[in-house]
Amino acid sequence: MPFVQIHIWEGRSVEQKRALTKAVTDAMVEHVDADPSGLHVAIAEYPRENWSRAGVLGIDRKDV
Image 1 (cartoon, rainbow, N blue to C red):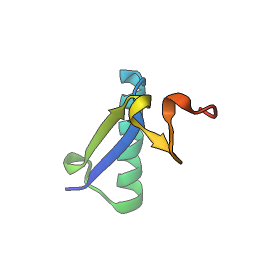
Image 2 (cartoon, rainbow, N blue to C red):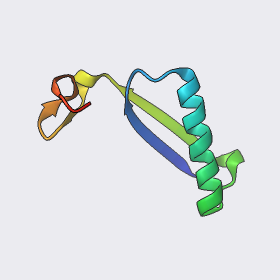
Image 3 (spheres, rainbow, N blue to C red):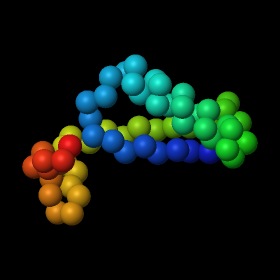
Image 4 (spheres, rainbow, N blue to C red):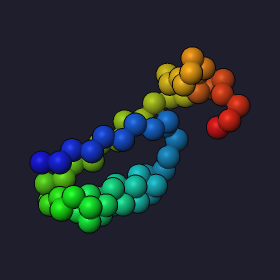
């Protein structure tokens, strides 16, 4: 049972998440011979104030 975790900032539409999980599933099938019927993809969304890089919160970043 392959399990793929995706961690992203919140704000994507349901349609974007559908497309993302389809693309990840297709890639897993193509590249690692995963059985799509047993493949799980979990998306964890985070508010920008709960994520930081290099000590700077997402809400304070200027490059996003």
